[in-house]
Image 1 (cartoon, each protein chain N blue to C red):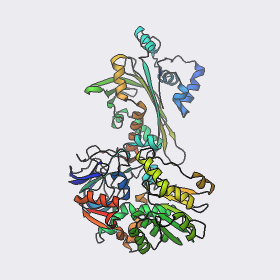
Image 2 (tube, chains in turn red, brown; image 1 turned 90 degrees about the vertical axis):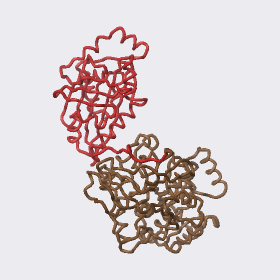
Image 3 (cartoon, rainbow over the protein chains, first blue to last red; image 1 turned 180 degrees about the vertical axis):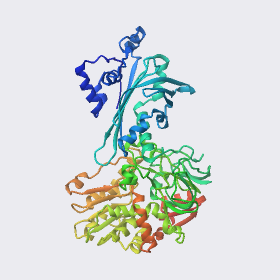
Image 4 (cartoon, helix red, strand yellow; image 1 turned 30 degrees about the vertical axis):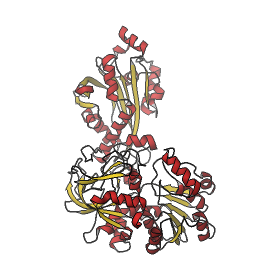
Length: 230
Length: 389
């Protein structure tokens, strides 16, 4: 499911809320529904307790407030789940090396892991250009859960998590990805919009399907380069 | 190479296109020695299957010789003679591992199209529209076979192509149609459509212990074939009311199981046929479900409908009350070729099954447009066309 909502910041959670949010993120079938207008970034940051405080959330610039008022500054939220016929540890290990992600996420050009928390992301942008940002791992539970968020000064403010849950029967692992992008407006807003096309949900769905193909079949189905008549 | 390319409804052309090459590690390239036109290719030919693009190479029944293998294929070597099942399966997903190859999760790269239409993704099919993966088909001199390590069967060199070719699609489709009927001793099985799939469904039903098999069609040459090779009793539905005839031939009960070997371009009679033809032409209904309707009414109480003829979209005016109140079991689906191919090859090698009788025409690949035309128009007693590249 995908939703677009106003950019409300909310990292100043009460301690009593944290448990509720942790259970939503860690176990709910429909996270975005539970999240409603809350920012994913704020909730992930708060429950991670990683010491990273997202100061920017509290101080909105005049421009940002104006953008919000006229509806320019919109958040893209996407939630997708796929079942993969592999054990969680194998999937977790592959995903945890973020440098693998461009192999199946079409909009990514490269990811460079800088240390065990920080990585540098480069995404394809329209007209052959690219956008870059640094991201930090917020929370990392082996074989279960990874959450991350872009650095405060990133051009493309984004955050997300992936969750691995054993599927019932012998079906492998249920993999849920939830992403949030907060385009800052102006030129970059259109860049982010183009990264995800008309239907961000479909693009993330395709990315997850390619992840599944790679993990199960060892290669990604394609017909690029096959013959065709005139 | 030369290949059969679709351009628009009733317009296929043999064109010169680039040779296929290895794209993924698990690919192989096959030099085709025989390739057939399937009844379901006529749905494409007639323009009833959406997302076929002008220039697409079609065809999903083919066999030949391995000429190139990818780095991930260790069980095939150049020169191996192989038959290729029409449904493309990865062999690794939950469905393939449970022998439901036509429900493969991973072979269809255009899954989003199917997900919108069907709610889920099924396997890709060679040369059968972009909704089903957009893979180039096998009515050509060469074809790229993805997941070749699990997607072909090696066949002996001492049997002619005509005995082996139909392991690709027509025989397993008919065989699975009979298998889905869960045939018990004493059962009478009625098969709508006496084309290649119908013939193999009838033969398979007898192999599985049916007491009597009844074939239904309107073309005398196909009914003759059903009598001669499948040992079936037959009904020409243009001469008698098929429903009434079935009642009389089954002691008033109706058949225990009914197999649809026709699909979305069924022909009926009278007003009902006019209704479906008109709606389909106006694109108000994608499929003409005449056979389905008749099976629901004809089948005995508590019986089984086995649907192997291809449907692609929406049907209407179904007598669902008949199906419900009679407690019918509906089973259906694209066949799982990789599940059946070894068993079928064994039957052929042992001489228990000789499928070559269905071939009515053998033509050079260049004459594919003529082959499509006579098969569609049922001219010259055309039952099955095999093309030789």
